[in-house]
Amino acid sequence: MITTLIVIFSVSFLAFSISVICGGGAGLMLIPVLGLMLPVSQVPAALSIGTFTSSTSRLVAFRKNICWHIVKYFVPAALPAVWFGAWLLKYVNPVYLEVVMGLFLVSNLTSLFQKSKQINATHKSSNFVLGLIGFSAGFISGLTGAVGLLFNRFYLRYGLTKEEIIATRAANEIILHLVKIVLYFIFGLITIKVVSIGVVVAISAVLSTWAMKWILPKLSEVAFRKIGYGAMVVSGFAMLAQSGSHLLIPENLNSIANPMPKEMASKLIWNRWNHGNFAMEFGYDDDSGLEIEQTIPIAELSSEQKRLVLSNAKGTDKLIIEIVYSLGMHSYEAYYFKDNILTKKLDFN
Image 1 (cartoon, rainbow, N blue to C red):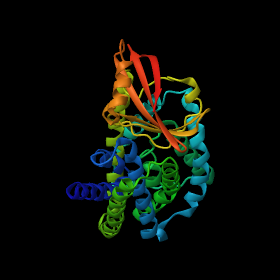
Image 2: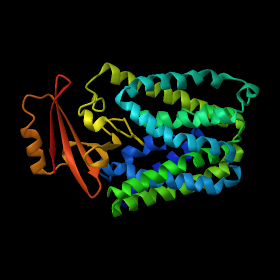
Image 3: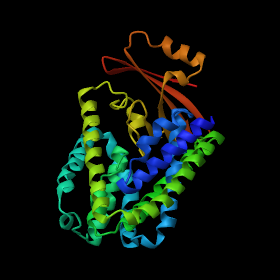
Image 4: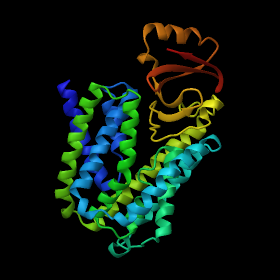
């Protein structure tokens, strides 16, 4: 237990320190580590405690560097756009958008070879464009659940200093983290164990912020920007590889095409991790209202639940299990496929 907590602390410290410079990516490193101690359905809750604390500590540490002008136009436009992007999910396959996003990120490769004068060039956007960028960020977040490094280029070219980029990005993201924590609490996903691990992640996040506050002045603006562009390029190649595999391999666990139209009608994704077998979604169902759906391995079911699920698997070649949290209760869903076609859905407790 203590050894695992030390590992979580060390990896969290490294992840949040890297994300300060790269503009994101902490979650990708922490998800598998947190999964060592928590069920997959509780990992996002513990991670959100850490990311919220990280953003808060960055606001405190770099509060004098926040560019409120950007926040003023970015956040109000981003929040409603999340719902619009989520609504569009029933018409658009987000994988295709991820391909476009990956190509956009990879297009920053040329920036890595620019001279100091070129890479430090600034381009301040108008107030209208700031709102448009905020709307785009919210829209893409609602549609794909992952914005991450996509808008790094905007921050890097706006003419902000290293400290201003970190502070302004934190101010733009902190509300979303807070909303997620509230939702996790309402749905009963925040347990004592989640809080204890979340506190370890949060402490490492705070310490990494203060460590980076000391290190940042020693990092040149050119190096900071090149690291940021480099992170975008690497992320772009990873996104292209991932989305490409989704298109080429239709049996991917997360590529269920509208299995139950009624449930998909008002799907809202605040955050989703499409790495391995990990996927979490916030959604809305006409019957049960707001809910959280989490893909889980069959190993997390009880013996009786396993027998029930497997007894219905005859004649199918693929099985997906989800735990569904709604207000005051939780249930399970099993999806059975044959030749990548949904043949049966089982609801059970």
